[in-house]
Image (cartoon, rainbow, N blue to C red):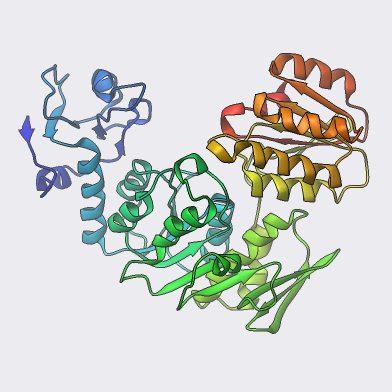
Length: 433
C-alpha cells in the first residue's frame, strides 16, 4: 500500500501500465486500475473485492480506508476523484494528443458522432463512447483511449457551475464546439439561459484553443470574438445550411458549396450535421470528402430512432428532454401527414422554470400534433391546455396504465413521438407495446 498526495500524483500509478481504468467494478478488465469513488448512493470501497475478482491489479482508495486489499495494490489518496482527474491530465500531457471538445445543452452526442464520421477516414482519431461526459467519465475516457491516435474527440457536459472549466483544465482542446444551449439542468442556474450559456462557453477559454465553432444563436447571449458560427436559420452564419423539402444546401461564408439529398427529417438533426461539417472544414477536410462521408451519418438509439410496429410508426426520441429538444421533436413530428400523437414525459431538473417550460411545450404541441398523452405530474399543464382547446389529451402518472391505454388507442398508420427526460425511461413504452 502506497500513500499518495493528489498533487503531484504518484508516478507509480502511471508506471503500472494498467490495461484499463474504471470506477464501476462491473466494467473492470484483467490488469485494470480501479478508482474507489464515493457517490450519493454507493461507495466504491464496497466493491474492491469485486474489482479484484474481475482482474484489477490495483485501486486508488481514500486515505481513511482501513479495510482489506483483496490482493490489490492500493494507492491511498486524499481525494480519489482529483487523483483520477490529475492522472488523466498527466497521461494526456505525456502522449501529446490533440483534443477536440464538444459541449452544449442539445445535440452534443449526435454532433460528436457526426464529427467522427466525417473525420475518421482522414485522421487518426478516437471518440468518447456514448454520452460519457462527466467529471468522472471524461478522465476515464482519456485514460482508456488508445495511445496510437493523434486526436481525441471528447464530449464535455455539466450540471453545475465550474464543471466545464475543470474538464478543459484536464484536457485543453485545440478545437472547441458549442451546440445549441437550452434550459437543461436549469435548477442549478438561477439566471436561466444566459447563465447556462456563460458556463458552456468556458470551453472556449483555454489559451490552447485555437479554433472555436459555435451555434450562431449564442451570439445573442454573449459577445464573442474569434469564433466561427453555424446555423440552419441565419444566413449570416459562416456555415449555413438551407433546408428544402427534398434537399439541403450548404453555404460557407455566403458561398454555395454543396447541395445534397436531405438525410434527416428533424431540423435539430440537420443542425447537428452542419455543426459537424463546420468542424470538418475547420480541420481542412474538402467538401468532396465531406459529401462522400455524409452517407455514414446515422442517428443513435433513443434519438429520433424510427421503429415500425403493427403499421404504427414510433419515433423513439426519449433519451432525454428539455424545452428546446422537445420543440424540435414536435416540429419534426409535424412534417408527417398521418395522425400525429405525442407521448410526452416530464422534463426534469428545470427548477423554477419547470411550469413555464411545460406550458410552452403544450402551446408548441397544439400547432404540430393531433393528440397528446402526458406522463408525470409536471406534464399536467400540457393536459390542461389541450383540454381547454378541446383537443384530445390523456394524463397518467402510472406507466402501465398509460401503456394499456396506448395498446387500445393506437391505430394503423399513426405516427407516435415518444419524448421525455431520461429518468422517465419511456423507451419501455415502445418495448412493451
